[in-house]
Length: 158
Image 1 (cartoon, helix red, strand yellow):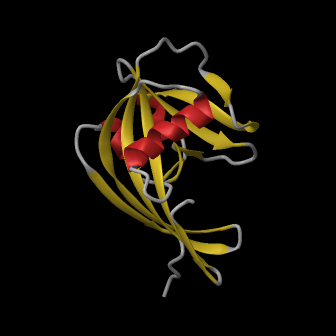
Image 2 (cartoon, helix red, strand yellow; image 1 turned 45 degrees about the horizontal axis):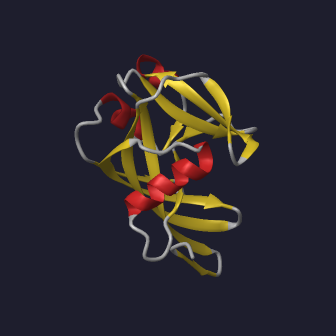
């Protein structure tokens, strides 16, 4: 079971995401969903009694079929968004992953469906992309420190 709590129109989720770099850290892997103009980090929900690093490894294997990446904890992102009829509060534990193999294709589809588009992006071009959570661009530019960010898209202007 995923770590998820739902009450009426509210949902809490505990997630893991992985910011994957190639071995010389000149590129980062992002994805978008067919029809959306923004990019995101690969990841998913953490299961009950599952360590976050194990969830990260599981998600990469499920979505890409990859194993044996090198990992380092990178930060926490809190996200407040509306999705699928719920106001969601998400806690997202983010890891840095290093992909040590040769990049065969710059753009490709994931294993979970043709609606998921993966793309290796040059680090120098990251500012040209809309990416969520918002802290990702900063993490890409300096992945040697620990981050915390809050994206509250539910707040109303007073």
